[in-house]
Image (cartoon, rainbow, N blue to C red):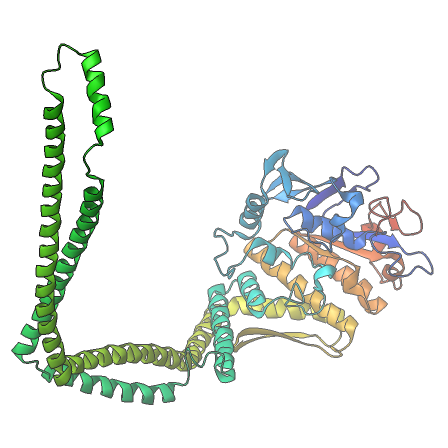
Length: 567
């Protein structure tokens, strides 16, 4: 049970609770509009605070985004796994929890709550198809913000079929894995439907296509491939064609080598021409000047006459020019010889290539091989498309078979857990009978879409009677949880549950809630407008005995739960 709820906000009205029925009353000032009372009295805000302290996410629409509540800490003292604990959470961008004044992450906290309240030991799988603390707890504190007062079996108006099937089968003590597998089938069917829609629109026609059409195309292309492969296997090229092809390749390589050598010799010829032009005898005046300097500087070393020196220089120049001229002539002769050889080789290569082109045997063989490669690629692509299309069209049958298999599993589980189903049905009927002369019924069906939950009661179209279906359903859940020893140990209903409900049914529901809570040992917390709570009276039941000392009002700035007003 919850013992108290408090906040670091100085104006916040701390709430203390006791076992059994607790009624938080709010006085609504005359003439106030619904917008004027939003977040002022604070009835619905109490439910939001409890969810805030049990790991709910803070989105942009919640009251915790109000600037007046930024950095405010909320706390709750309650019983968990037989011990009284205190949890606090600071209203920051990132959840900051403290359990008994020890920091704890939101994930760890929800894990502890799931283990302690519902015996959950495994985390949600990648698809989110397992019972989680938040998905189960929302049935015990329905939120108006989630539109949880539309259908008894849903804790939120947008709750998916698989989500509530998994949660309720878990709470009923049935095999919830069946509901999980059913949701997987629905997910696959949704994907299949989208793919088929894309195929019909032509968006995937080039990728997948129609299986019947692809089967024909694949058969035709596969036959063509088989024929081309046979032709290639039977094709024979005469030996001389291979020899001539090899000779042509060799001639091409030789011609390339000769061309490279000619290039080298041509470069050498250019260098030799340049050298010949620069090789000239020194001028007479230069030689006279050099000799005169030698005679002056080294008079003792000059052993030759002037004529001998001049003859020596002329001899050196002449020998150098003769050498360069010889090298130049040799390079030109080599180039000439290579050109003659290139002409002969090129002529031979032309004859060979013409022979190969005129007969065409190698070209034909090459074309056949290319055709085989193209057909192999096309056949493989068609085969993959055909297999995908066949699988796509066959998946529907597989899913129908899977649905039938799951239906058999569900029926077997219902038969094996007959006693638990009976307990749920009778618990719902008992509560409904205490509210109305004509008792309502809860029907649990096994269908090809999984378990369904229907509720029949006279006048069910009335909003008030539909809300009492939710009341009966929630009381049934509390009875089942008490028998199995699971659950939070408290049930919370805010005033939205009683919107449109006849005053006699309101007081009857509160009395049934008080008696059921006392019988099963759980805590029942209700928030109500005071004028709605006391429209009717019932003999032997005084609502004032269960009203909390704190009363809320929208008549003054400080009258609400937070003690301040904000949008």
